[in-house]
Image (spheres, rainbow, N blue to C red):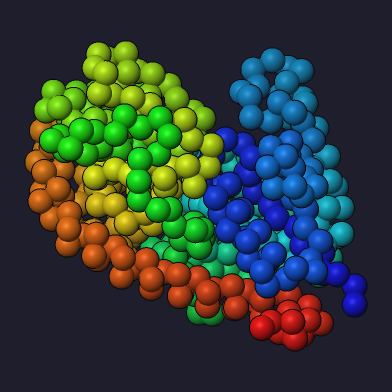
Length: 412
């Protein structure tokens, strides 16, 4: 039997821990259910993906300056030429595969600033190439949201229509695609792929101060280089200043109460926010964790008493770790996640962080911590079972029949 050829696609290896965590979950599924598969990636950070996950990886864009702002004529010409070259590069890569999986990520949304000729264009090339060459493209547990920009919305809509398989990480994502004109009658909703990753054991992670027995435990605060969404460009600076000021005041108040605080990130760009808070809050109780994966984030959060976090996959990690969590919510995906996990009451708007109100909500969270831990334990069991169904459905939908037979025959 010829091994099935599987490609994984996305902004992987580019510094976003959530994206890489979704990839890790899909690779775990492939190794368990399709050990015969030959896997490689077309991604944003091929060197990082190849080194970490030991699979061949190809650069997503021909033009190496794709992620830098083009202001000079040469750079603009290079980007333009790159868009043309990527048509043929993407098509050639897709044609070599039986299946291409887009693992999770918010690939059908614009909740953060996004240009149509960036990732939406790349995703459209992928899905169009899949339809042209008969390669099954699967959008697995992806995020979606209403998009204001007409060019971006058109590219996202056609990408979804051309995909052979779609599933979403929450109900608002499916509803958003239906509202944008995609037939979602056969599309299912499953938890975020990161819930398929191994859960950490509670304990003190390396580098954590470890509070004395007579002092309350650590609070993990997950920060984000937050400037609003794609429709907030005109007031992005104001949104960022308000977010940073409110979060800094909250951290300072915790430190003044004698609480150890661990600052966490989810993307390399978040480091600037950590540095700003450390510069403004002069306290040995406030420290920053160095994390290279979602597993590292979960270990930090499993060791904490409580978590307050902004970035979506920081929330996923905290909830997966079973730690009572308060969300600084910036999109419907955060609200849907908190509702799914039974913590709908513990949300605060990231665009208008009010430190005093946030402290009130935080104290209410701590008072209910024991019950919330029990709630999270039950919801995590449900999420694990639902993701098992997701992977079974994915195998049935997009893998060649001989690959499915091989997997079923060798299953214990």
